[in-house]
Image 1 (cartoon, helix red, strand yellow):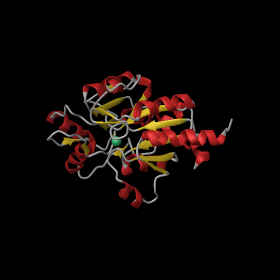
Image 2 (tube, rainbow, N blue to C red):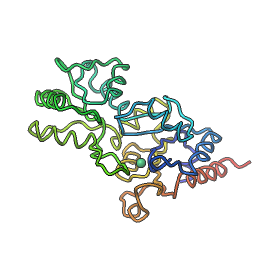
Image 3 (cartoon, protein in one colour):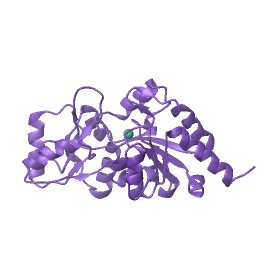
Length: 273
Ligand SMILES: [Mg+2]
C-alpha cells in the first residue's frame, strides 16, 4: 500500500460528506489540502451534480473557506462533453434537458441546444424542469437518437423536508414514456469520468486516488477506473458497510485528515532523509 501511496500524483475529492457536510466545513479539510500542496500532489473537486455550474461550486467552496478556482472543479457535465467528443464526434446540435447553467456550459464548449433538429439527447439534473420540454425530450428519445444522462443519481441529498428528484428519476420517467429506452449513463461511477480527468491532468489511473464517502459511487468509480479507492467515514457509508463491500476499498479512514497523515508517512518511508 505504501508504495502506491508514495506514487500518488493527484487526488480526486468528492465534496459533500468528504470535505464538508451541507454548510459545515470539516475541521480536517483545510489542513489536509495544505498537506497535499506541501507533498506536491494535485487535487480536483468532483461532483455528479449538473444542476450547478463550475462558477456556482467555486463560490460555494470559497464561502466555506476552501480555496478553489474553476479549473479545480470537474463535474459530470464535463465527462458528458468528453463522451460526446470522443464517442459521438460530429454531434453539435443537442436536445438538452437541464438548467440554464448546464445549457450555458455546453454552449461554451461549442454545442447548440436545438429542440427542432437535434442529433442527440442529453438529460441532466434539471431543477428548472418544464413539462413541455420533458415531453419534447421524450419525443426525441422515442425517435431513436443517441441518448445520454449526465449521472445516475435518483435523488440529491438534502437535510430539508423535501425529496430532490435527480437525473436518474427523470430518466426513469422518460423510460416509462418511451417504451423502455435507457440512456448511456455518465458521471460517477462510470469510469470514463475519471479517465477523462486523468487525461486532462496528465496522470495515469494508478497515480490517482479517489476519496469519497459513498461505496456505490466513489469507491465503485475508483475500482472501475483503476485508481486508489479511499473511503472516508465522515459521510454516508459506515465501517460495517465498508467491511461488507466486495472488493473492499483500498483504504478506509475516519476522515481526510487521517488520509493526509497516512500519505505523509508513506512519503517519508519512500524517501527517508
Ligand atoms: Mg459525498
